[in-house]
Image 1: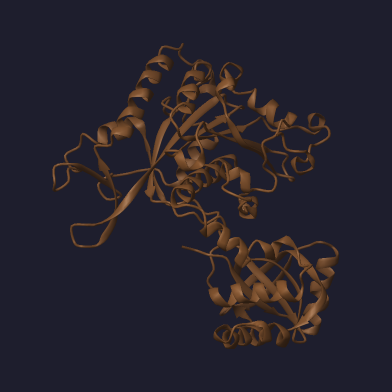
Image 2 (image 1 turned 90 degrees about the vertical axis):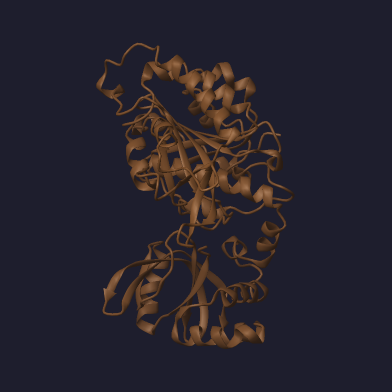
Length: 450
């Protein structure tokens, strides 16, 4: 599992001058460094070192190759320490088991070890208590609060996070803000409860977007909203409104569904997440397996079929905007059991399977297991949509309901809200033009609704 890490960036006097110019102008800074491996989906905290003093810290991202054996390291969101800290003062604060490796990195540059990074964070927070919330995000106290969550709570938070990330990917918006998650006091009510910009609100922007869902006014009395957030691109003015709704406490929920609505094309897509288990394959090699029968899935598919009968009775589509490759809005995502890591914004690898394909798959002769049951694996599923291909077909509404079908989907939402699952309802409104944006509302400045 990819984790946040730290990187010591050593700058010469000339490069420090260039760096300070970028900081003053609030521009990103790029520095060629020795090749290193680090997932772009997890944070990389960079400590800027000049003349054996740590002067700044910020978030970094590994960029393109910058020459033989070199990679470009891009620094952004840089913050200045009120008083530079000598490397030696930091080393003196570290446990002996971490001091040697950390000293080496601060003297020659490069990635810190996982334990060394955690120790450096604590040392700097002790020496510079005024350091920003960026370092708080990687503190030992935050780690311990996450560890205190029950396994069931972490499992449900992981599924809700995956639904939010999927919606953001479909909408074409950055997932970086999700890394700001921090556990609130006590047990969170939903994943959005841990994002600084997401609270239970009666913000007009949220209400306006949700009212664009066909039939929402008829089902809103059944929606128990536990978190709401508006994710917005400052560059394109595009946004995504997400609410998490459920009728049970976090530790009693039975999974998560995603309902994605594209207002431009008046199209719904619904995703149900199913966890696969690790088992030994035919050659003793571990593989991900989803075993059948599954009474819960059987019940869910029965509900889907009833709804499909309703939407298939709708008038045939006559608009080019309403054209779909398939008008069945239901998909399953089979993926390895999720592990809750709020710092990782990568989508979990898995198989997106259209409901119609799933029905044919479970009848095929290639999936019976050795003990009489059925087992679906990446190998015997034959084909599937991965994260990238699924995002592509949903983002432009090549799949999903037609406009006339969307008008009757309120019953599907109502039934889903009664299952005991958390439901992530994501609405992608039409792109705002300059004349219609008006004054923007900053969610962080609105008092949460009690």
